[in-house]
Amino acid sequence: MSKTREIKRRLRSIEKTRQITRTMEMVATSKMKKMTDLVQAARPYSMGLEEVIGRLTDPKLRQRYPLLRQPSRQRRAAVILLTSNRGLAGAFNVNLIREARELMGRLEADGVGVELHVVGKKGIAFFRFQNQEMVTTRTDIPDRREPQHAAWLVDEPMKAFEQEELDAVYVVYSQFRSALSIPPAVMQVLPVEPAKASAQRDADLEAGMYILSPGPDEILNKLLPLYVRNRVYRALVETSAAEQSSRRTAMKNATDNAGEIIDNLRRTFNRARQAQITQEISEIVGGAAALE
Image (cartoon, rainbow, N blue to C red; front, side, top):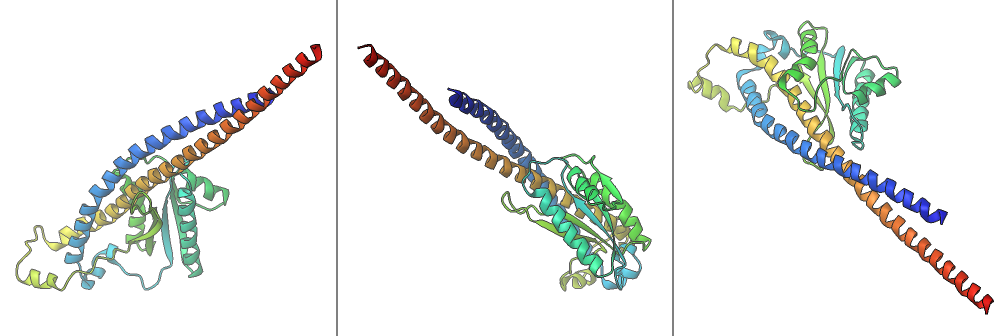
């Protein structure tokens, strides 16, 4: 009797757990859809901005614009790591932290000083446990990322780069390729490396295909910081979508595993109950035989 009671108690506990994981899976699915829409909306603008920068810049401008400066060698670099504030997302945060540590190891092996900026409680907790110095830590960026959140993260490193206190700025984020492919990635946002424009650019300019108003200098002074912020914003929204995708997968696996455990426990309960009934019948038959 005590065995069947214990099995029933475990069944109730696991069924409640399955209800929770199922609910979390549904919530993560809904959030992933919203984040995916943000990713899809951000990509065309980012690609268009990249094309404009590529068409307006050339190597001659690198001395005039600090964000285009190409250091002869890197002496100090900033690494911005994007993690989540919550867990229950599988290996999502572990993969990002591992990617950041590998990047930092490569930079330090080349003699580059590294300053670390971390977003998310999970990354902050890990590096605090490792006694790793962090220049900035942020836990106030919500799931629904906005362009100003990118400015919070990159404006200070961008100023340091302009003042030649930094020679490079990297962002470690989760690249959202699809719901099943969210690999960690490293993106170098500074110095700005404009996409190579086609040979048609100069011909178009000479043919008067572009009307620049205001002039190129004013445009680039506005566009270059905007381009850097936009790349960080795109990393933010992709990481947010990847987090929800990873959490959805983790909760689905947990729900499926809970279902398998429940099925096994029910079979065990039925066998135990059957054995108990058989024993009771045997006792009744034995008692009746003794009375005869």
